[in-house]
Length: 288
Image (tube, rainbow, N blue to C red; front, side, top):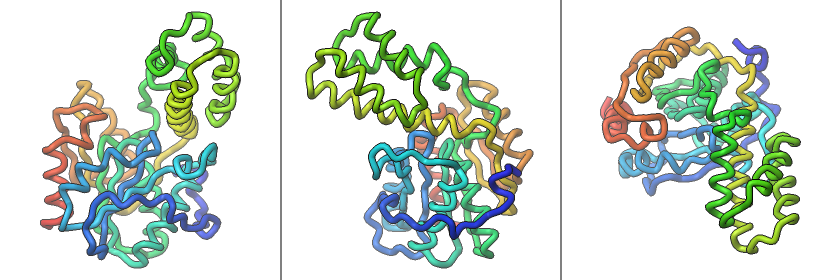
């Protein structure tokens, strides 16, 4: 168990209802489903699942505070899980609880489950969609990868129009000089050095902010270890690329017991939208 999770004091963080996004129109909020954001910090990916559960179960998304308070970045997974736990308890004071997490959201769901268990709460269901497992990071997704930097410059070029190689190198130089929470500040410096259209620049700022949030989340992953919990897990893994699902499931099984584990013919981004996965989740959440 990681050092952060050895001593839990969930009273240090308070509930934050602004983190909650209702994802469907079901009015019966008894025993809802809570979906925790992936590494992007947003919960829009759960929309198809929420629509499938329309009329059967209310669905609440928990998003990162970075998207409700500008330039506020999370300090640790421990504090995030404490806040999400308190927020869920404010909406649903008593169990049984149902949680789903995609990607990094899967790790956060396990952290929340640990806190529910410590409080003696009943957990009816924990579903993980291609869950993040420490030590299995994809190199190309990390900021120190040339691939990641090239991708960002391509996105900036699409939003600002053609930029010169020198402008791109200067932009990367400024970003490399600061941690992700300071990227919006140094990006503004770079924009000020160039004569870009005001509206295009605003769009680029929004995109850069999303990148900063994601890379900050990836930085928080360094040294992180999953908690051990008593609740058995229901897991869906992306079958693409070949072999990765086995790596992830074996890594997760070192920490927690997998009650249900299935590989689906899709990739990491597609698994949360996959029809087979959504039908299977519906069965577990509404028919059992």
